[in-house]
Length: 393
Image (tube, rainbow, N blue to C red; front, side, top):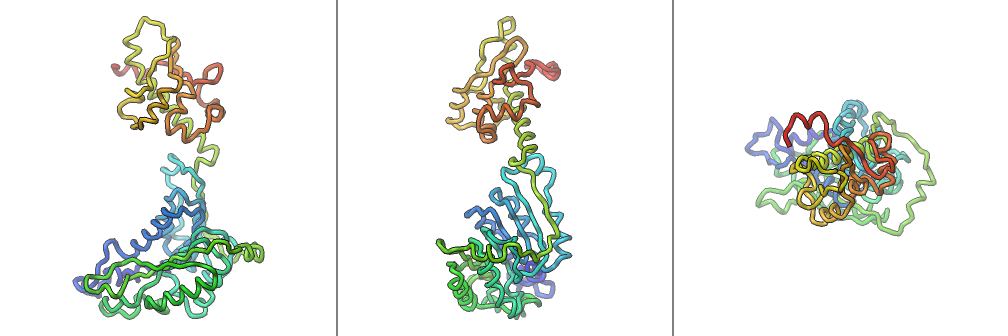
């Protein structure tokens, strides 16, 4: 399982002290990183919501995947409970995750258990990964593995990686790459097994790999061989769910949830902050013009959001379409020393438009945190504040 990364990489990644460095094959980036990046690229492409890594080991792959915005449930399963407890904290949200919440909820769970045990909490997943796992299974567990993962769990996609034994002669003094490996297959052996499993459980499978062979040895194939299994459409997948939908055999050893805009308190925090920043940006943009117009009434709308200068020079860059939308929205204006920014104007800015669907939604969220006009159609703030006196506009 992936907890043996250090042992596996001791040979495969060229870090084995007993092997002369000049004779060991060097992979750049290291082979284990190539495997993880392969999975991440697949996630970027297919955007699964629920992902489980069987044999997650030190949780390195989970830590890489948790930044993907599409994932809402990320699960790791491993037989080594101590390692799961030790590495769990590295999956918890950091301060930055609270300052900039995700769009979607994310829950991460680590389970202690065997990958050949059935647990209904892993039913209905979009993607299950088994990275350098199957070669650690004895013959009995290997025989049960397809029945559990393909038959019972039956996710939409399964990714399995395993060493390609045809590559091993290129390493100095290597028979098996890890002392815990029960076997290592040739490409033909892996593909024969994979095609049989795919046919039995109604999956299609494609073969690829990572770890390019050196020049002159292309015939041995990739160092790590990979099978990508996809569930064939049209097959009923609910039989196992109804059969044992409350079967919980794994032990949850770590659970954490990330802040997101789907949670009311974080959504309000982000929206109030964005509105405040945009209003302040518009206010500061208006001050030089107001200085020039001292002595005039300030109740006429002042165009401060047009294509020439929608925000100060340090603000975001808008597309022509976005500029036009801002220009065509109600303009901020002053009444005396009060500065008004219509909510419709705020909704024209892309970042706020992404957060709020309409004016009523924005008003209901910010009303108890930001001063509004008497009719609730605009944010109201003082045109001048203490800090303005410290600077010349």
